[in-house]
Length: 139
Image 1 (cartoon, rainbow, N blue to C red):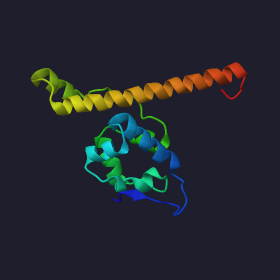
Image 2 (cartoon, rainbow, N blue to C red):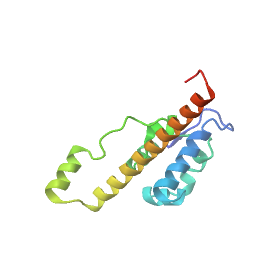
Image 3 (cartoon, helix red, strand yellow):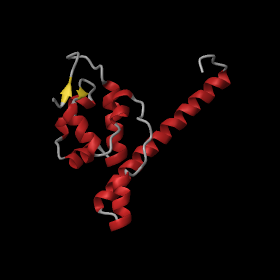
């Protein structure tokens, strides 16, 4: 399993993935540096992905998933179906024992993800409304 994959050396076929990774880092951790601190990696780990030269490999995707990144969104630009904010086992543990610091972090990450999905849906709705107003037949 590799950290990144390149199909076309010297080309930038993954520029949108790099842009989404930067967006996730900025919205969730304040910066790419903040993301790197959260996963315990140097910024150089992400340089070629951020530049759009490489696609994140399996290990990098696992690290990003662990800190709340929606990998489907990162790779395709489309969000995975919305799932419950709290998995049942976490909800049960919170009800029975009270929340831990990890629980608060997980909830915060899931809420950030949900807010990004809402923003994307609002943008799609606005785009559709503009096309409808123009009489665009490709709605």
